[in-house]
Image (tube, rainbow, N blue to C red; front, side, top):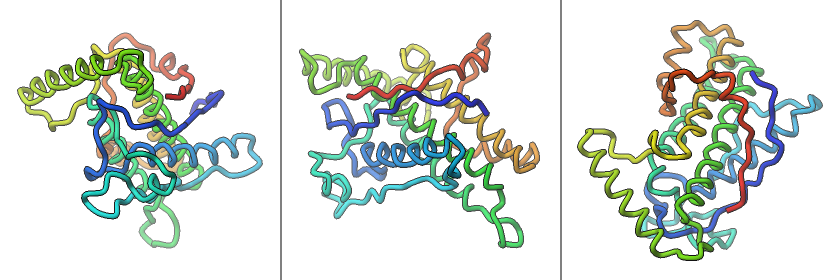
Amino acid sequence: MSSEEPEELNLQVLDLNSGEIQSNAGLPCFPCFMREMRATWRLVQKAADGTTPGPTQREQENCTYPSLESRKCTPCDALKHSQCFIVPTLMTGHYVDIRATLNSIDRLLNERNDSGQSYWLSEDSRRGIVKAATRLGVFFIDTVSHHRALHSLNPDAVVFGPFVETYRQLATTRMAQLQEDMGDGLLRLGFSDAEFGRYNDACCRFTHDVDWCLQQSLVDECTRNRVIKNMPVKFVEVPQVDVRRRFGLRLSVPAA
């Protein structure tokens, strides 16, 4: 896998803003997601100099709600956050995909061999998969930040209300088109969105990195393809784009 590492990570918890979906809808909230990524990436970075082994499991936040009516999960309530939220409406599908993929990754990391005495994958493979999944999560956070800024969804925008209404109209139009296409009913970025290319590249890198980690454990091609196919995160093949050039992207997660 590529040895390039991000120069800096700034995973500050974002404040709730209009134009974003409230949480407590069957998904862990976005602040909890960011805390998971931050905690795991710190362990990955700590191991970068080779003095300590990298993590073979992801750090996880227990994002649970006291009741169905609760607007804040237990961790966010303890940290005195105003409310929980997920992501901007047009990125809901991506968030569902990445959460489901992380669940799939967690199962893969805990898979045992036929004897049950050891893990199916080697430690190096498991470390590599944790690193790949966390890198994807960080890129997703970065993409959400860019998307919010592009559509002026930040609470400190000079003119806030009109931008939010424009975004809602855009989401309504996209949803109508989605229903015509008989999709899964979840909105995702498309080719016309400025952030699509960068996140698509991150998904592509993630897929290649997971495949490489499976190869390290001598997993046959048929099984590797099945494992990757069952992960909801997908990338779109873009013609005439060098995959190696895609992976030259640097991680940069600006503060909201």
